[in-house]
Image (cartoon, rainbow, N blue to C red; front, side, top):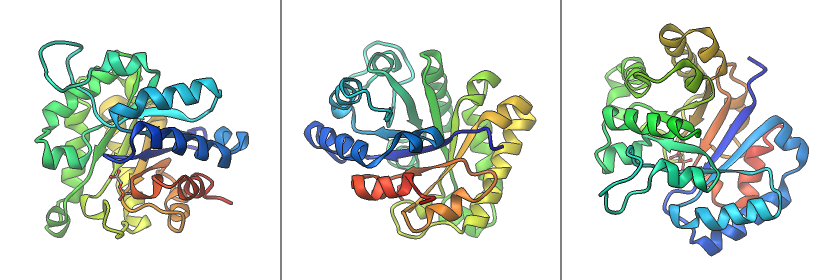
Length: 257
Ligand code: PGA
């Protein structure tokens, strides 16, 4: 368990122009130390329009911050107006791609089948998918959290190899906890994280289950991150609101201090 490097991802959603992104990456880099990166892999996921600018800052200044994308199309190229492909992201040295975020599922009609194709496209181009799963409030209240989460993990990873999953991340993000200030109970999140790992183990074996990083997401902040990271099966966090301010995000990343 302890061999898994922690992974903390800032999902900037539809915030920050490329100019603002440059500032945010620079400020974040001032606040993080080499020893932080030894412990935590830090990824920021700006909007598509800011990826190139963020990449240039990261590469020019030799920063250890990694670059993430928030979405991708499942085909490598073609007549898909307005979409961005995995090869385009890979060319920008994007290392991680968030796939199946609940906002995309709810507002842009992404089904498990679409999410699965996106996971495969990301892997095909050598990047790591961050597959997002999580129940709605109604599903939680009707007692179907486990069933929903297991279903999303199975469908999302259908036909994906153990090697890909071993190096991937799965983010447990209860929909009711996202952007609401109401984080999940860390014990509950820890149990769901374990269930996610068990699901991976039963489908893809021990190495995939041991390697896959399970993140918690949903109103993570500097005050609650520690309680989540203390859970055996939680290896990191997917952070929305609290990732936009570099001071706050740095405090999340350096949660043990
Ligand atoms: P939040 O968002 O931290 O603002 O709740 C998390 C996410 O959507 O990934």
